[in-house]
Length: 281
Image (cartoon, rainbow, N blue to C red; front, side, top):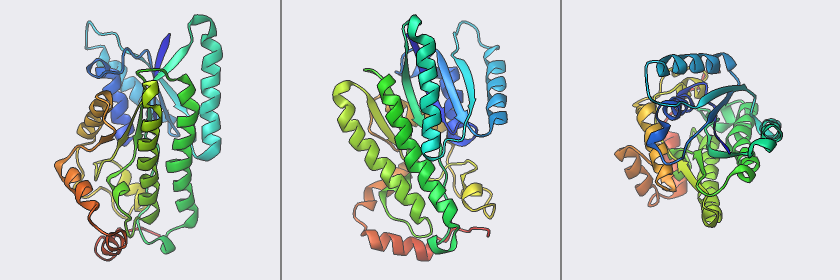
Protein backbone atom coordinates (compact mmCIF):
# COMPACT_ATOMS: atom_id res chain seq x y z
CA UNK A 1 0.00 0.00 0.00
CA UNK A 2 1.32 3.42 -0.97
CA UNK A 3 1.81 5.78 1.98
CA UNK A 4 1.40 9.50 1.37
CA UNK A 5 2.12 12.60 3.44
CA UNK A 6 0.18 15.77 2.54
CA UNK A 7 1.35 19.26 3.47
CA UNK A 8 -0.79 22.27 2.61
CA UNK A 9 0.66 25.75 2.36
CA UNK A 10 4.03 24.21 1.52
CA UNK A 11 5.39 27.06 -0.59
CA UNK A 12 6.79 29.05 2.35
CA UNK A 13 7.32 29.25 6.10
CA UNK A 14 6.57 26.27 8.28
CA UNK A 15 4.96 24.29 5.46
CA UNK A 16 8.14 24.53 3.43
CA UNK A 17 10.27 23.52 6.42
CA UNK A 18 7.97 20.58 7.16
CA UNK A 19 8.32 19.36 3.57
CA UNK A 20 12.08 19.63 3.81
CA UNK A 21 12.24 17.84 7.17
CA UNK A 22 9.96 14.99 6.10
CA UNK A 23 11.75 14.52 2.81
CA UNK A 24 15.25 14.40 4.28
CA UNK A 25 14.56 12.98 7.75
CA UNK A 26 11.25 11.10 7.77
CA UNK A 27 12.99 8.10 9.34
CA UNK A 28 13.46 10.13 12.54
CA UNK A 29 9.72 10.18 13.20
CA UNK A 30 7.20 7.45 13.90
CA UNK A 31 5.07 7.95 10.80
CA UNK A 32 6.26 4.80 9.08
CA UNK A 33 7.75 4.69 5.60
CA UNK A 34 6.45 7.55 3.46
CA UNK A 35 6.46 6.90 -0.30
CA UNK A 36 5.22 10.28 -1.50
CA UNK A 37 4.94 13.80 -0.11
CA UNK A 38 2.27 15.96 -1.70
CA UNK A 39 3.20 19.61 -1.31
CA UNK A 40 0.20 21.81 -2.08
CA UNK A 41 0.00 25.58 -2.52
CA UNK A 42 -1.02 28.32 -4.98
CA UNK A 43 2.55 29.30 -5.85
CA UNK A 44 3.61 26.33 -7.93
CA UNK A 45 6.89 28.01 -8.92
CA UNK A 46 7.97 27.90 -5.29
CA UNK A 47 6.91 24.27 -4.97
CA UNK A 48 8.89 23.34 -8.07
CA UNK A 49 11.93 25.19 -6.75
CA UNK A 50 11.62 23.40 -3.41
CA UNK A 51 11.43 20.02 -5.15
CA UNK A 52 14.53 20.82 -7.22
CA UNK A 53 16.52 22.02 -4.19
CA UNK A 54 15.63 19.01 -2.06
CA UNK A 55 16.36 16.47 -4.76
CA UNK A 56 19.70 18.17 -5.41
CA UNK A 57 20.49 17.97 -1.70
CA UNK A 58 19.46 14.32 -1.50
CA UNK A 59 21.93 13.38 -4.26
CA UNK A 60 24.73 14.08 -1.77
CA UNK A 61 23.33 11.52 0.70
CA UNK A 62 23.94 7.81 0.10
CA UNK A 63 22.20 4.77 1.51
CA UNK A 64 18.83 6.48 2.02
CA UNK A 65 15.65 5.96 0.01
CA UNK A 66 13.85 9.30 -0.25
CA UNK A 67 10.12 9.81 -0.82
CA UNK A 68 8.82 11.15 -4.13
CA UNK A 69 7.94 14.85 -3.97
CA UNK A 70 4.72 15.80 -5.76
CA UNK A 71 4.12 19.56 -6.20
CA UNK A 72 0.41 20.36 -6.61
CA UNK A 73 -0.86 23.78 -7.57
CA UNK A 74 -4.19 24.54 -5.91
CA UNK A 75 -6.15 27.38 -4.38
CA UNK A 76 -7.35 25.67 -1.21
CA UNK A 77 -9.65 28.41 0.05
CA UNK A 78 -13.10 27.37 1.25
CA UNK A 79 -15.36 24.65 -0.08
CA UNK A 80 -13.93 24.90 -3.59
CA UNK A 81 -10.48 24.12 -2.19
CA UNK A 82 -11.85 21.16 -0.26
CA UNK A 83 -13.53 19.84 -3.40
CA UNK A 84 -10.23 20.12 -5.27
CA UNK A 85 -8.44 18.01 -2.67
CA UNK A 86 -11.30 15.50 -2.62
CA UNK A 87 -10.96 15.14 -6.39
CA UNK A 88 -7.20 14.56 -6.07
CA UNK A 89 -7.77 11.83 -3.50
CA UNK A 90 -10.48 10.18 -5.57
CA UNK A 91 -8.20 10.14 -8.62
CA UNK A 92 -5.42 8.62 -6.52
CA UNK A 93 -7.85 5.98 -5.25
CA UNK A 94 -8.84 4.98 -8.78
CA UNK A 95 -5.19 4.86 -9.89
CA UNK A 96 -4.16 2.60 -7.01
CA UNK A 97 -7.18 0.28 -6.82
CA UNK A 98 -5.29 -2.55 -8.49
CA UNK A 99 -2.09 -1.95 -6.50
CA UNK A 100 -3.23 -2.28 -2.89
CA UNK A 101 -4.64 1.22 -2.52
CA UNK A 102 -3.07 4.05 -0.54
CA UNK A 103 -3.28 5.73 2.83
CA UNK A 104 -2.57 9.21 4.11
CA UNK A 105 0.07 8.53 6.75
CA UNK A 106 0.37 12.21 7.67
CA UNK A 107 -1.83 15.20 6.94
CA UNK A 108 -0.39 18.58 7.90
CA UNK A 109 -3.00 21.33 7.61
CA UNK A 110 -0.68 24.31 7.44
CA UNK A 111 -2.36 26.58 4.87
CA UNK A 112 -3.60 29.80 6.44
CA UNK A 113 -2.86 33.47 7.10
CA UNK A 114 -3.54 36.30 9.53
CA UNK A 115 -4.49 39.97 9.36
CA UNK A 116 -3.31 42.69 11.74
CA UNK A 117 -5.35 45.65 12.93
CA UNK A 118 -8.75 46.52 14.36
CA UNK A 119 -11.54 44.46 12.85
CA UNK A 120 -13.54 47.55 11.86
CA UNK A 121 -10.56 49.03 10.04
CA UNK A 122 -9.34 46.01 8.07
CA UNK A 123 -10.89 44.83 4.77
CA UNK A 124 -13.90 42.62 5.49
CA UNK A 125 -13.28 40.45 2.45
CA UNK A 126 -9.82 39.63 3.77
CA UNK A 127 -11.23 38.69 7.20
CA UNK A 128 -13.81 36.41 5.57
CA UNK A 129 -11.15 34.84 3.35
CA UNK A 130 -9.17 34.16 6.52
CA UNK A 131 -12.10 32.28 8.05
CA UNK A 132 -12.44 30.26 4.84
CA UNK A 133 -8.81 29.12 4.70
CA UNK A 134 -8.12 28.84 8.45
CA UNK A 135 -11.36 27.07 9.39
CA UNK A 136 -13.43 25.85 6.42
CA UNK A 137 -10.48 24.54 4.42
CA UNK A 138 -8.79 22.87 7.39
CA UNK A 139 -12.03 21.21 8.51
CA UNK A 140 -12.97 20.10 5.01
CA UNK A 141 -9.58 18.67 4.06
CA UNK A 142 -9.50 16.80 7.35
CA UNK A 143 -12.94 15.41 6.59
CA UNK A 144 -12.06 14.16 3.11
CA UNK A 145 -8.72 12.74 4.30
CA UNK A 146 -9.92 10.65 7.26
CA UNK A 147 -11.49 7.89 5.07
CA UNK A 148 -7.98 7.25 3.70
CA UNK A 149 -6.40 6.99 7.15
CA UNK A 150 -5.84 3.89 9.27
CA UNK A 151 -4.41 3.02 12.65
CA UNK A 152 -1.06 4.77 13.09
CA UNK A 153 -1.86 7.70 10.80
CA UNK A 154 -1.52 11.31 11.98
CA UNK A 155 -3.23 14.68 11.52
CA UNK A 156 -1.18 17.77 12.42
CA UNK A 157 -3.25 20.95 12.45
CA UNK A 158 -1.45 24.28 12.66
CA UNK A 159 -3.19 26.43 15.27
CA UNK A 160 -1.35 29.20 17.16
CA UNK A 161 -0.46 30.54 20.58
CA UNK A 162 -3.18 33.07 19.74
CA UNK A 163 -5.68 30.22 20.18
CA UNK A 164 -5.54 30.46 23.97
CA UNK A 165 -7.02 33.95 24.42
CA UNK A 166 -9.06 36.52 22.45
CA UNK A 167 -6.70 39.18 21.11
CA UNK A 168 -7.41 42.80 20.26
CA UNK A 169 -5.97 43.93 16.90
CA UNK A 170 -5.94 40.25 15.93
CA UNK A 171 -9.56 39.38 16.61
CA UNK A 172 -10.53 37.15 13.69
CA UNK A 173 -7.17 35.37 13.45
CA UNK A 174 -7.18 34.48 17.16
CA UNK A 175 -10.77 33.28 16.86
CA UNK A 176 -9.97 31.05 13.88
CA UNK A 177 -7.02 29.51 15.67
CA UNK A 178 -9.10 28.97 18.80
CA UNK A 179 -11.45 27.01 16.55
CA UNK A 180 -8.55 24.94 15.18
CA UNK A 181 -7.32 24.09 18.68
CA UNK A 182 -10.78 23.16 19.96
CA UNK A 183 -11.59 21.13 16.84
CA UNK A 184 -8.26 19.30 16.95
CA UNK A 185 -8.52 18.25 20.60
CA UNK A 186 -12.12 17.09 20.15
CA UNK A 187 -11.18 15.18 17.00
CA UNK A 188 -8.27 13.58 18.85
CA UNK A 189 -10.75 12.26 21.42
CA UNK A 190 -13.07 10.93 18.71
CA UNK A 191 -10.34 9.21 16.70
CA UNK A 192 -8.34 7.80 19.62
CA UNK A 193 -10.04 4.38 19.49
CA UNK A 194 -9.30 4.15 15.76
CA UNK A 195 -5.61 4.74 16.43
CA UNK A 196 -5.46 7.99 14.44
CA UNK A 197 -3.40 10.69 16.16
CA UNK A 198 -4.41 14.37 16.06
CA UNK A 199 -2.03 17.10 17.23
CA UNK A 200 -2.58 20.85 17.34
CA UNK A 201 0.59 22.84 16.70
CA UNK A 202 0.43 26.13 18.64
CA UNK A 203 3.45 28.29 17.80
CA UNK A 204 3.96 31.86 18.92
CA UNK A 205 6.00 34.25 16.78
CA UNK A 206 8.00 32.36 14.15
CA UNK A 207 10.40 33.79 11.57
CA UNK A 208 8.35 33.44 8.40
CA UNK A 209 6.64 35.81 5.95
CA UNK A 210 3.54 35.81 8.21
CA UNK A 211 3.98 39.41 9.45
CA UNK A 212 4.50 40.79 5.97
CA UNK A 213 1.23 39.22 4.81
CA UNK A 214 -0.70 40.06 7.99
CA UNK A 215 0.36 43.71 7.93
CA UNK A 216 -0.04 44.07 4.16
CA UNK A 217 3.64 45.02 3.98
CA UNK A 218 3.73 47.39 6.96
CA UNK A 219 5.85 44.96 9.02
CA UNK A 220 8.33 42.89 7.05
CA UNK A 221 9.29 40.45 9.82
CA UNK A 222 7.73 38.98 12.94
CA UNK A 223 9.14 40.60 16.06
CA UNK A 224 11.17 38.14 18.14
CA UNK A 225 10.39 35.31 15.76
CA UNK A 226 11.66 31.83 16.67
CA UNK A 227 13.23 29.37 14.26
CA UNK A 228 10.74 27.83 11.85
CA UNK A 229 12.99 24.77 11.54
CA UNK A 230 13.03 24.09 15.29
CA UNK A 231 9.33 24.79 15.61
CA UNK A 232 8.46 22.32 12.87
CA UNK A 233 10.79 19.61 14.15
CA UNK A 234 9.28 19.87 17.62
CA UNK A 235 5.76 19.63 16.21
CA UNK A 236 6.60 16.54 14.15
CA UNK A 237 8.22 14.91 17.20
CA UNK A 238 5.22 15.79 19.34
CA UNK A 239 2.80 14.32 16.81
CA UNK A 240 4.86 11.14 16.41
CA UNK A 241 4.92 10.82 20.23
CA UNK A 242 1.12 11.20 20.36
CA UNK A 243 1.00 14.58 22.05
CA UNK A 244 -2.27 16.47 21.57
CA UNK A 245 -0.74 19.96 21.68
CA UNK A 246 2.71 20.96 20.43
CA UNK A 247 4.23 23.97 22.22
CA UNK A 248 7.96 24.30 21.74
CA UNK A 249 9.49 27.46 23.24
CA UNK A 250 9.41 27.83 27.07
CA UNK A 251 7.96 31.34 26.64
CA UNK A 252 5.07 29.93 24.65
CA UNK A 253 4.38 27.28 27.29
CA UNK A 254 4.32 29.90 30.05
CA UNK A 255 2.02 32.17 28.04
CA UNK A 256 -0.40 29.32 27.28
CA UNK A 257 -0.46 28.26 30.94
CA UNK A 258 -1.13 31.70 32.40
CA UNK A 259 -3.72 32.58 29.75
CA UNK A 260 -6.21 30.40 31.64
CA UNK A 261 -6.06 32.83 34.56
CA UNK A 262 -6.68 35.95 32.47
CA UNK A 263 -10.25 37.04 31.82
CA UNK A 264 -11.19 36.90 28.16
CA UNK A 265 -12.29 40.51 27.96
CA UNK A 266 -9.28 41.68 29.96
CA UNK A 267 -6.92 39.85 27.62
CA UNK A 268 -8.60 41.27 24.54
CA UNK A 269 -8.73 44.81 25.96
CA UNK A 270 -5.08 44.75 27.06
CA UNK A 271 -3.82 43.52 23.70
CA UNK A 272 -6.00 46.05 21.89
CA UNK A 273 -4.52 48.92 23.91
CA UNK A 274 -0.90 47.83 24.19
CA UNK A 275 -0.19 45.35 21.39
CA UNK A 276 -0.78 47.47 18.32
CA UNK A 277 -0.32 45.63 15.05
CA UNK A 278 0.25 47.74 11.92
CA UNK A 279 -1.74 47.34 8.73
CA UNK A 280 -0.97 49.22 5.52
CA UNK A 281 -4.19 50.34 3.82
